[in-house]
Amino acid sequence: MTSPASVTTLPALSGDERAHSDRVAAHIRAFIRERGGEIGFDTYMRLALYAPGLGYYSGGAAKFGGGGDFVTAPEVSSLFSRCLARQVADILRETGGDVLELGAGTGRMAADVLAELAMLECLPERYLILEVSADLAQRQRERIASLPPRLTRRVEWLEQWPAAPLRGVVLANEVLDAMPVERFVLRHRAAGGLDVRALGVGLKDDRFEWRERSPSPELMNAVADVVESLRAPLPDGYVSEVCLAFQPWIASLAAQIDTGVALLIDYGLPRAHLYHPDRSQGTLRCHFRHRAHDDPFVNPGLQDITAWVDFTRVAEAASSAGLEVAGFATQAAFLIGAGMESLLSTEMLLVGEDTQAQATLAGEARRLLLPGEMGEVFKAIALARNFDAPLAGFSTQDLRGSL
Image (tube, rainbow, N blue to C red; front, side, top):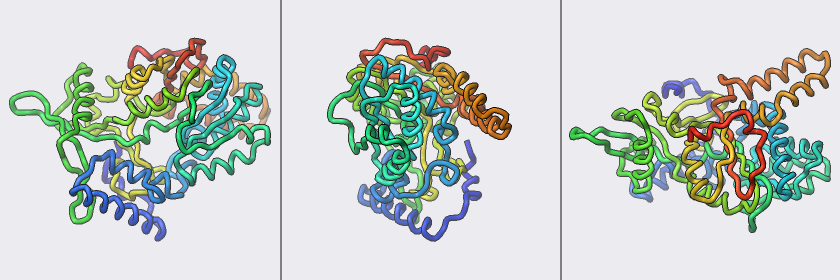
């Protein structure tokens, strides 16, 4: 984890950026005072990211790509979305129906998936995009408008879940990591056992600070489940995160699927690996102009705040909601299973003797596949209902036993 001292190396803010961040901070401070001087970290994170007109995903600043704060796989290369589209096509051939993408970012993945599905002659009846950010929805519309009319007319934007369950595919790339999390710290009792303390947010001289507080029953139970499932004890002062939002969110997701598969791709680990004694300060990450650090109180409203995904919790929530975990693999294994090697070979042939284009393609593939890049940190999980056909993306690796 990046040292908190690294925040001193973050790029300076413009006057407008500083003014916006000050407005976000003032909004959160007022909220804290109204709640008696403390709030849970999940509430702080929700306000910093999603407060209407103010939060990071609502405020209009560039977020993705070279001019933003981080780069997602669809922005790295169209190879990612084209491989994903091949898996989507296999599912649609079985189910027919629609594609629903959750949180479509710049719209690049949607555009690339649609273009590939058209080439594969397997277009969905509709391509639905559920987007809570009006700013991002506008950027997506601009991107989709560049596609041929026979593709653009299939795209619809939603501000809430569809009115009726769908047949087809749900896609969510880097959605889970941005869901608000609770933070906790473990304290060893002198007489033995552990105390679970929530890490909330308070104010000191108008500055945000961590506050230990009594955990909610939900957080207490969630942490107890984590501790009891681990082989190695966790040390005194161990800090980490739990996303209590997974359960209701996946229950809502399950209610949208009549027949088909949800493909969720994000960075994270199974529980036994995520809550390791050596990972004693958790996985909270903040991203600002391609710098990562661990201080969520810096530049509120201007930086992304994320935490690694506990895929065991995702699988448990899916099972409770009546979904089957139909596959779990690293991103590298998923992309290879979905046809990355043949797709890359074809693209290399198309660029011919253009060595610069060859090098670009190879570099993009390495970033998507290598363990030191996105290949192993990111995982893909398939959640299915009324669907038992094989999934090519999970044909080369089965990590479900680790969940």
